[in-house]
Length: 176
Length: 291
Image (cartoon, rainbow over all chains, first blue to last red; front, side):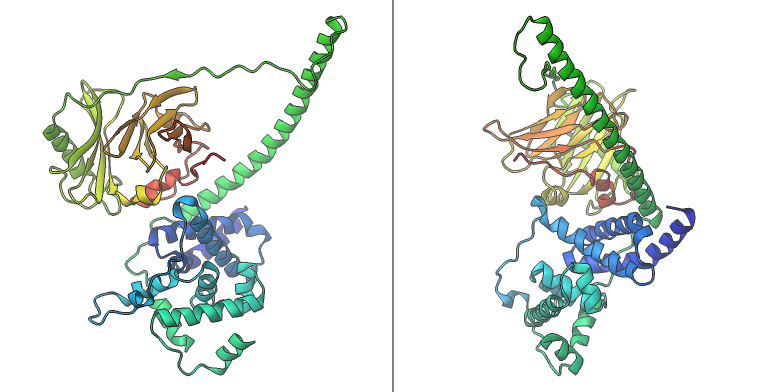
């Protein structure tokens, strides 16, 4: 990579690293793994820098990389994830509020199948468009909509947050 | 409303209490190194292909010569060649550290602990309490030195401690962190210049370390921990694996792990001052399981 490109990369990476780490954390629920994933993702971006679309593709590619790294981590035999059929009640916020809501959210996310979790995190945390999410996950836009919809519904159920007045654009997205 | 979910996700991902433990310079270094390795790999692949071709031609030619000299003897089908079994030398591990009492081990480790608390030897989850009441789980030693694993009373933290009152190997070393890393990363070992240590994974009966020259040792195991010592400084054995080979009670290999952080060299300076970062020096390696 040329020196000028490295300067550009450093600028991009500095701006993106924390967001990538947070995205990875929501995907895996572990700050250490998230840190590793963000770093690995940025290394992938570095290696692909010269063939990436710097107009708008960098962010999508970086998120694609971080999701890929987290899911790859989960596939490793010593880190294999299991979606546990645990009673939903165990996840509901405790009455006395001793459990941090944030941990409940992370715990609830881990209950989602990986693809749904990725869709929810990329769409509703990373603010990627449907198209960018589809690109990041190598799936179709329709799959993103359905997976996001199911993931969102499950998340609401797990967190005991019933669906309220859904804005027209959200409903349209889900139903289309 | 998705706004509520978005807010919940944003709150859950709050990382204000989670400082970054590496710099972008580290990422750039890893990226550069990856590109160098890729280029080197392409060159090496070309060289191997060319070499294989030359070798194949030479061996086939040899076959033809043998046939010709053999007065009409039919050559064996395909390339021929002599396979020499690799010489294996077994090296015994040092015995338990009987020249030091438990109290001495605790006191000497605690002295290192005090100076390491604010340095890289104090890792995430390792805590900062003195180790003077920690149990000695496994040790190795000779006249002037010992290496030991000490475990906290709550069994959540451990320290690896090496002390040498004399010159030479092993050097004083100290490392303290949470025990949970081993549960999360079975078969991975932590390597320090003069050997390695770790938890014995479930179902493992024996752990054998193999140096690049074929020298093997059976690691010392006790209380579910293991220690392996070598006079070699593993940092000076680049680009070759140092295998930790795990065997079950039936003698069959369960898994193996390349414990050499210098394979491939150079070691990427990923980050400092944190347990997970320190583990990252073996991050490129993954356990290998027999098919």
